[in-house]
Length: 224
Image (cartoon, rainbow, N blue to C red):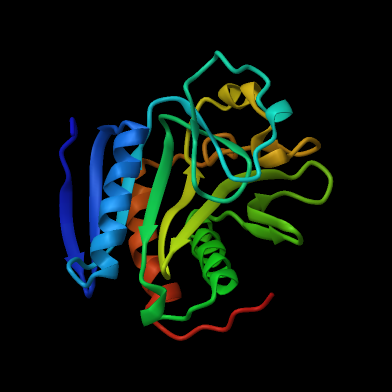
């Protein structure tokens, strides 16, 4: 499919790392196939780390007026929840394929755990990430001048998850100008680099692996 995969297995979860930029439609096809295989008991759960070329995706709640520059980058309709978001180089996309029948059959708690995962990753770099009532994702800053740094969009099919989260490490933030990201009009978008944190993809990947176990490999409380 045009890309190589480096694979490791940790416990019952497989981790994949794809170098280079992975085509979005090809990635969706891989996820669809893997979700079916997990549901059938033919493959382990999967965490897939990758980047995409510059593109916009529209979630199930996307509004036409939020696509400000429709011809700037390719636009894809995604089955995940949420509105428009941007993917591109310098952003770690994490596609998460977990079987919730082995964990907790509660989508709200699953999203809460994804947020907790993002918060713990940011903490490894000295950044305080926060939730916001009524908004999915992770934010930094105060109520005045806050900015989003981790986007989350999920889909669940027969209790197997896919899509996931995207962490801004050092993307071109100007690329967000073509959309109203996630329906946000008053707040901005930021990155580790914009906050003065020099972190590589490998640094973030290492933090993802360590903190995944902290969140998903042990019982945890889900607050709503």
